Image 1 (cartoon, one colour):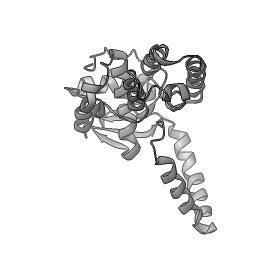
Image 2 (tube, one colour):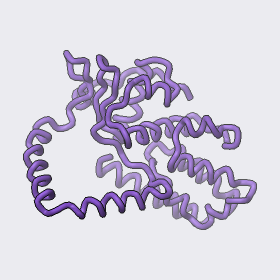
Image 3 (tube, one colour):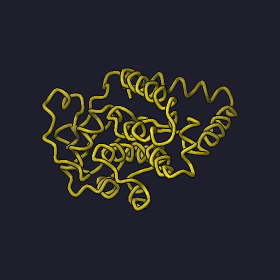
Length: 235
C-alpha cells in the first residue's frame, strides 16, 4: 500500500474512531457496518480496541464485535463457516472480505495458484478471478503482482499487511530477537546483497502484470489501458 493510500486510510480510521468514541450500544452498529464496507479501509484493530465497542460483548449486539473480528483477522472461508451466527453481509462487505482474504493468502505464499484462489474466493472461472485481482486488488493498491496465465498463478511480491492476530506480535518479536543474535558479518553481507539487487529492482520497477509472450500481465502497462469489463465476483 503506497503512502497516499496509507494516509487516506489513517484519516478514515481517525474519523471513524472519533465518531465511535462518542457512541454506545446500538448507536455503534452503523459505524461498524460503515467501517467494514468502506472501499479504502483495510484495518480495524483501532475500532475493535475501543472500550465502548468491547462493551457490546455479552449484549444483544455482540455479533457485531464478531463482525469486526472477522474483518480484522478472518477470511471468506471463516465467514462461510460462521454465516449462521453473523449478520448477513452486504455486497460491499463481501467484496471487502474477499480482498482481505487475498492479503491473508499472500502472507504465507507469494505464488498463489489460480485453483486455490478460486476455491478460497468462490470464483467460478479464470476471467472472473483475473478481473477481481486487477480491478479490486491491484488497482485498489493493496497488492502488486503478476498474473501468469500459462502457469495459472498470481505472483505477489507485495501485499498490504492486515491487523495483527492475537499472539502474532509475540511471534514477530521472537523472530526479530533471533535475527539480532546473528553475528555482525551476516548483517553486513545482507546489506551488501540488498544494495547489489537494488539497481535491478529500480530498473524494472513494478512493471509486471502480464508480459507477453510469456502470458504474464504487465501491471504498469495495464494501468494506462481502460479497466477490463468486470465479471462480478459472486457476492
